[in-house]
Image (cartoon, rainbow, N blue to C red; front, side, top):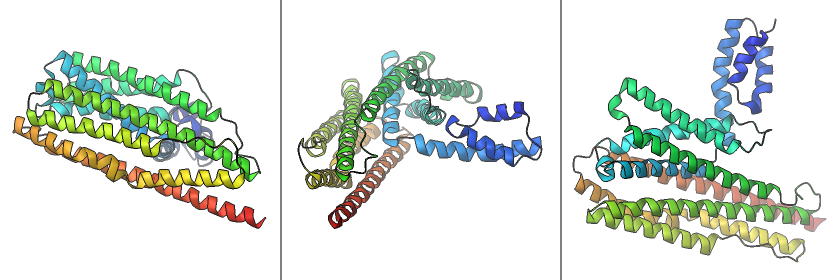
Length: 363
């Protein structure tokens, strides 16, 4: 027995293209009857989608995109309404978070369902379009279930439009950087240890440059966002807190450029020289990630504390302050965990280099 072509075609629509053929084959082998096939597919699909999301999601880049969407809607509220008044309403900031959450869902699903075999120029726009579509869907659902939580119409339209532009532009830049990385001479498959080390060092250098570019872009967004706070808010504590956050962002950029900038591989050098250089670069970046709480997280804490106190002083009845504090704490924990995880990966690479050096010395 086998499922009908029509039934398989319908199920195939919900399976990410990267694993579609394999999953359909497994479902085909387990087929007993249409009802069992649908139930089997319903149980399998969430696991397949989640697995694909884990493979395609870039958490650091996703957080940067979330910040871009949030700034888009805050700017729209500020320009089209009385921005400070709207954001400081008890539900104002939470209402702005709804489209941000839907955008993240759309970006995750858009990347998961992207076909890796197709490299169309429109691919950079597909996930942002899905994100915006889910934003509109969420507003439609709120219109029926809870109209009070909807954003004002033109604030939502303007925020969604700016979000689409920022997300698409960011993904185009990201793709360009990825294309440059793939265009590098590929010696990864060479059996020559010297060529392998040179190739890995060059790849690592490009990855560090792209990482730093992301961090610089994030700092610019943070400075722009809290710069508007200094202009639109009259509360001295809010202005002071925003100034401290801007100063922290500037310090992070300075420290990252000073301690974490990519260094070029020496043009001439044998196996030992290249290996020592690559190992030193890995160790330098590992130590940078391990101390992220000191130079990346700690500088922002005074600013957020002063900003929170100023916000509570200016709006004592604001109910979202606790939620905002929890959100900031969760973001901090995620940032520290990601960087510690990255440091462990670099340490494993260093251990691999040590093993390679011993093997080459014995030969």
